[in-house]
Every structure is written in C-alpha cells, then in structure tokens.
Length: 219
Length: 148
Image (cartoon, rainbow over the protein chains, first blue to last red):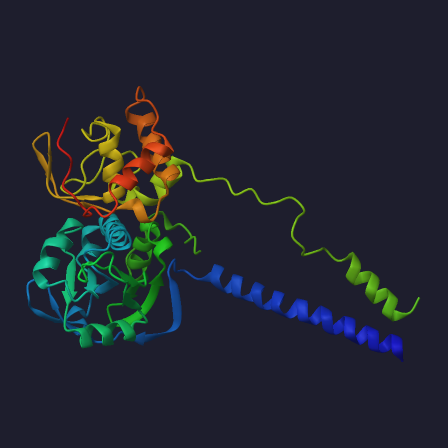
C-alpha cells in the first residue's frame, strides 16, 4: 500500500516536469513554423484609428494610410539612443525594400513628448528618411493612442534644476499594421537590427516575392 | 524489487537539469560585435555610410583627428550638416553614453582604428572615462567637431 503511494507520488512528480516540457516543445515548434520574423497575433485586431497631426501641421488618421503597411513606433526627438537607433534601423529596412514595396510602406513616429511640435518633427524625421512621418497631438490623444497600442511612457525626473530638461522612459516596440489596418506583427527593439528579415515580412504581407527566401530567424 | 524502487531508480538515472558545475563564461562583446549590432544600420558593415545621411568612415576627419573628439562624438551623439568631398550628409547619430560603458566605447574606437587608422595608438578605458566626466551635462547631438 505504502509502495503504491510512493509510486503515485513519483508519477505525479514526473508529470509536473513532463507537462511543462511538452508545452514548451509545442510552443517552440509552433514558433519555428511561423513564417514571420516579428511576433504575431494569430487573430489580427484592427489598429486604433488615431487622429493626430503630422510634421506639416496637417491632421492624419491611421485610416488615411489604408492600403499601406504602417511601421509605427513611439518616442521623442530628444531621446539620446533608443529613438534614433530605432528610426535608423527602420530606414535600413526601408532601403532594403524594392521601390514597389517602398511605395506601400509608411514609417510613422509618434512623439510622446509634449515639447515636440510639428516643427520639431519636421526637422527631426528627415534625419532618417525624407518619407518618414512624424506625428504629435494633444496629450489626451497621444495617451489614448499609446494605450491602444500597449505602449508605455512617463516623464523621468528632471536632470538638474531646469524642470524642462527631462528624459522620457518609453516602450521600444515597433508595430506593423497591415494594409487592411490590422495590427499584425510586433518587433522588439533588439530585433530591429535584422533589417533584411523585417523587409522579408513586409514583402510577404504585400504578396511580393521574398528574395532568396531565407527562413526567418525568429528570436 | 518493488515498483516504487524501480520508479525511484528510473528518476535518479534520468538526465539532470541542474546547472553545470563550471561557471558560464560571459565574454565581453568585442568592439566589432558592438559596431555590427549598433552602428551598421547607418554606417554599414564596411563603413561606407548612407548617401545624404551618414558620411563614410574610412576617410572621416573625426576618425583621423584627436581621439578625444571621437570619444565625444560617441558619448554625445551628433547632428547637423556634414560636407565631405562636395557631398552633404544630414543624419543624426545616437548618444551612446547611456548604453555603452567606458571599456565598450574604447573597444569600438579601437576596432575603427584597426580598420581605418592602424597606426593610431589604442584608446584606453580611462581616456573615455575622463571625457565622460568632462561631458557630463553637456547638450546631446552637438554639431560635428571642426577638423583639426
């Protein structure tokens, strides 16, 4: 009787180890089967139809970019590292695309900094690519847009006595919205250096042939 | 032997998931690895840059100028027009002071020196530390230093 109880305990202990291992294997094989480099949602949801202002002071909604792939990131123009690196990487992705695909892609940078104006963005975004779009808006609209995309931001404490001299902590994901306006893929900051793999995702979504069809090295 | 003993033996013989006895070796990233990860989106792996945005590295006056200027550029970033051989470049370079430590910045510079200025003496971690301290609180994204 006692030995049977011990045996049951051992079987239970093995199950505790084996079931998560099995789930992990299923998850890994599922990821390996994904044709996408970006992280994807199996059921794409409509992207929030923000209404903001571009670097020329003109209103722009997400809906205005329908039929284009939108690569969307949040940041601020005084950002020392994350934003210029992300936008530099997005410019590298853009350059990797053939002209026909470039025409179908919009790179959008939404500033979460109330100090950024359309004029600030007009100076900033061409540092990376003349076709990139910079957006700003009132704090409520920016906040609603960030929340809708799961982006986070908050003012960091001022550096010195000047209260206007502060950084902004913010999330670093780049969102890919498909031509139908659905959130399709998400790229982590560390994935952004893989410009070729991201360009492949874009061309696949556009139904264009992917050069030398390399399997995506999803991380 | 009872079933329970057999089961115990089977579990004991199973491969162990405990960590290895030897500590993991976490080798620091080399200057080339850091360059490839952080710099090539604009500078390209061969340093040729991007027309209109990022000038080529091999003949860069900053790379061939005083090391302190180069260290400052890496720490504070850079923006503004650069004219080289009649061509204008107007990109922006991130400020790496928040991401890279003194040793990493020295190793990136030394990798650039190995490739494009091999006669230059290597930059040391303490040189970077000095410039980091001297530039504390300086505005980021200064214009390119004048050629010296």
